[in-house]
Length: 303
Ligand code: ATP
Ligand code: RIB
Image (tube, protein in one colour):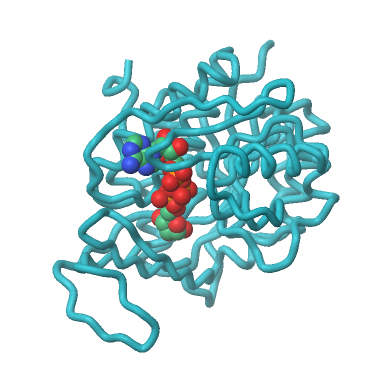
């Protein structure tokens, strides 16, 4: 039987969002506008994107044994996500993200990891059957890297495609052990610049960065580039898959929507370029709406 299930391993946060005229400079205090408490977290956002866009998904994560954590699990279930491996963690807070969003839709994000930092390789072992049965395992970097290595190893053993969204990119380089287990990586321009050690300022430097990341052994690099869409390299040449032109309200979770959509399209048998086109369409819709989960479209809005 063909494996089409997408297992997401990653973070689950509650987002505390304030809309502002401009993002505060260091040392600056500003008065913002309205405040919202939203569901978020890169892992949870990606799992929700998969579920809303028609994929079957299980989520492996930790939340705190608090109101935010219990609410997150209940809402993940309502999305049709298998939450058997979303664990309540005693005595720790659920991850929280503080997000000011400016009038152009740009944001800055500070994450207090809380329970996300306690997702261990043993938790992955406890979810081993689920991970081994996956067609695709999708991960980000808001949970410990040794845990992701364990998940990627089990995924590979089960024959799954391993997709890494390297966000947020850490100060230290990613371990070669992890990179060796990744099939597709989806950095944005900042992450690709950090990973490759090349400042991306134009298409030539974008290609250089993609090729340098490919040289680590990762077959497919998909560089997301906001309103420019996404770039890949084919036979050493740059390929642009343009974004859908749209009005921008809030870009929070655009990258997460892109990753979830990409995996759904791949799980349905699309080639990489077709999957990126689908992901661009889903992500473009997400930037027209505020918030993280709140902004993620359903399949019927895209087909
Ligand atoms: P974020 O951190 O804001 O969630 P990101 O920095 O991870 O996003 P981006 O490259 O900014 O990633 O955006 C991801 C994808 O979202 C893009 O490849 C594109 O498909 C879509 N997107 C983002 N911004 C726009 C925009 N202004 N117009 C249309 N599509 C957009
Ligand atoms: O990618 C957006 C997400 O980053 C937010 O939902 C926030 O929780 C942080 O994890």
